[in-house]
Image 1 (tube, rainbow, N blue to C red):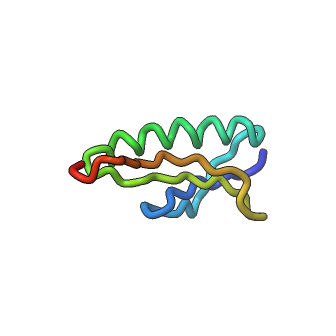
Image 2: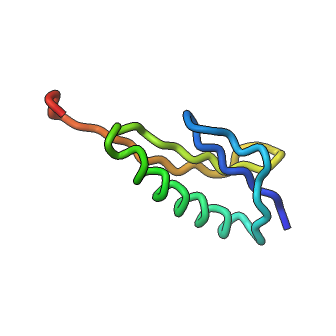
Image 3: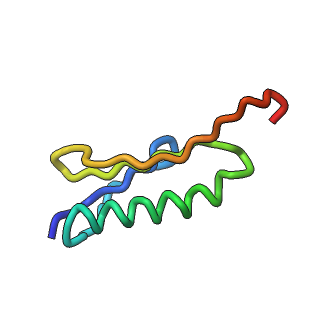
Length: 73
């Protein structure tokens, strides 16, 4: 099984990684993890980006970005 790393850019790097059967399963976990992280940052409106990588380099990115056209928010 390949070892995948989930770096939460701006929060923490993943130094240990996880074993997933394939990239599709690892991507699904990255998206689930992003959803969990967003719950913690919503009050601060901090953008969150998860980068999925192997030891060979980046494979996939998922992001939650806060944008508003209302300067009072």
